[in-house]
Length: 528
Ligand code: MSP
Figure 1 (cartoon, protein in one colour):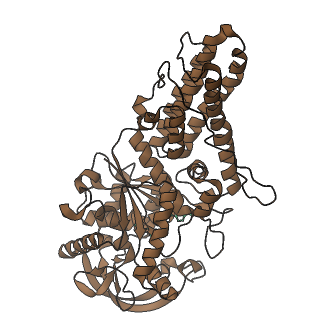
Figure 2 (tube, helix red, strand yellow):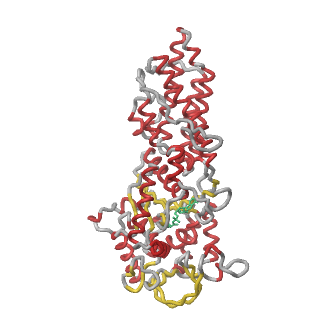
Figure 3 (cartoon, helix red, strand yellow):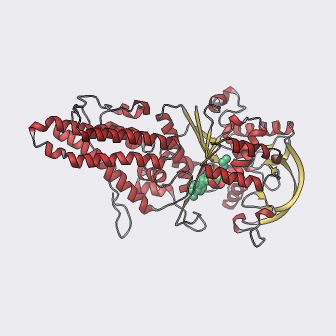
């Protein structure tokens, strides 16, 4: 089983384009793995505890329960709108998750991994963590990224993180795919070298923070939000759950032959996922072979700057989907960023990529193949034979594009996969220009040749429909319906060979699937 998770989103605000990117990427990868014939399970959800939520709820004069219910709804609605189809939904206020967190805490305490100790030091309210001198900037101050910094003296519970860091370094060095892409692993190893001696404070006194999961062995405390949130990857996979809990069978999801993949942004690799989480799993008794792979994606920025509500440059995915359509947004989010690297979010590029690659190239191919088949051969396809060099070149282009697509998608490189598919579409459009089916149609002696050319184009549309389906599932359903072969969307990659469309097949009625987005030059409002 291929078990994929994303980071769970903070519910102290509304979803932004970064959240949408990560969920669409995970959705595309899951759909692709199913296309490959793998069984897949995709878990995502929301991170509902912590000081920020408590504070924002207080400011808004509502209980944290009411507040998170309201914000959680926004995430659920957005995923539905964007066609993000998950198999498991993780909400950290779910009693089953709380039970799992408490069971893990008790187990770790019983096994001597936790201790209580007093600590006095600088504490960042925004990041909900104690700071050390390493966190000071060049001038010796705690920078604005830490928000309000206060001095606190208190007793807390600690996880003996430092006992696992030597193991972690060895594990990372010995496991090539522990962190992807590789340069992120190098970053993590560097951070580990600087950071190996400290333990992790995993509690917050209730007098300061009540909105969290109570420590099972010390009711004056709640669990540190990261310690709670990271556990979602196992709790909602059925770890330590009873069979009647309505959760998956953990042993089927979390396997060594196909290790789980966690998708997360670069900001939460160090220390949360790369250090805390892997060490927590190690303390819980997970072996090296049981460790999840971390797929670390980059950030969408705005003109090179971090997106942020306070700067006012945050991009709302809901608005974009309403304005340009879900297909344009999904396509852009995985097409204009290399998995692992940052990219600049640019609405003009969203429109340009949609118009060029979907409306013009693919849309044109679909439209010509289906329309001309309807007009010139009554919608009946003839596979033909005696292929010309041009036909064979088109077939080779498709084989190469499919192989390149597959290699790229196996490496989680969706942009490269789409590029490969696009190359074949461009090839087909060039073929059409050279073969000129509209000229062939004028000559009754060229009937067979015309049928063969139209078959090559329509067959290419069928393959493109399948390959595009992980990214644009809705468009794939529409195209399959127009090809009069709805079962296309249930095919697997291994079914893809020349001749998907049977000889004598009747296609359906063509309709534009990718209408061009026309921007009004003055108002920048789309006209269609
Ligand atoms: N709640 C924690 C994660 C806990 S996982 C056990 C968190 N939440 S978050 O809402 O701040 O971020 C959720 C995900 O969105 C993270 O993977 C983060 O990297 C990603 N992104 C946040 N802003 C982003 C961009 N501007 N671009 C791309 N992804 C970004 O961290």
